[in-house]
Length: 216
Image (tube, rainbow, N blue to C red):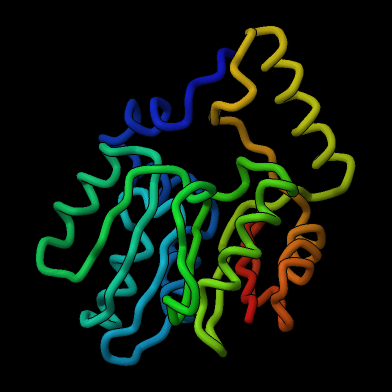
């Protein structure tokens, strides 16, 4: 298996991406609308979408709150272009870049959301992001994380060891993002969120290996 850079991977699959996610990911028809239902409904709510892709979750969210303002961050310019085409009349700011690098500000957002994106990164990377995210939310704000989680500690270790093996064998830049699933267990994800400063963190629903975590 040859690893692909994250942005190249998604650009190459853009044409069938939405259909693949909805048809092939178990529970997608339920977890996308469920995730959207947890986001704020108030007029002018400000929501940050980490790894927004083509905006599948936003299709459901804008149906519930068409006056929301969304800031979406994604590595793929092609994905962002597709998202923009979907919502020409919505209040959206799109940023092409890594959410590990983009400044998030302080007390700027009522809520943040991420769907099927963060399972590609290490605990250390996510801890720094979650600390910044906690700061970026207003008092009482929430983070809705719907993602793929490892079924055990052993599986989690195997994902990361396999990625490192392939990186070494293929001589890949350790500072580049490559597409390979390295999910944490849901328990470890919750620990990270609490360590980052979220005081109330709980799993709301699960679909096979995908769960929705709400962090306040």
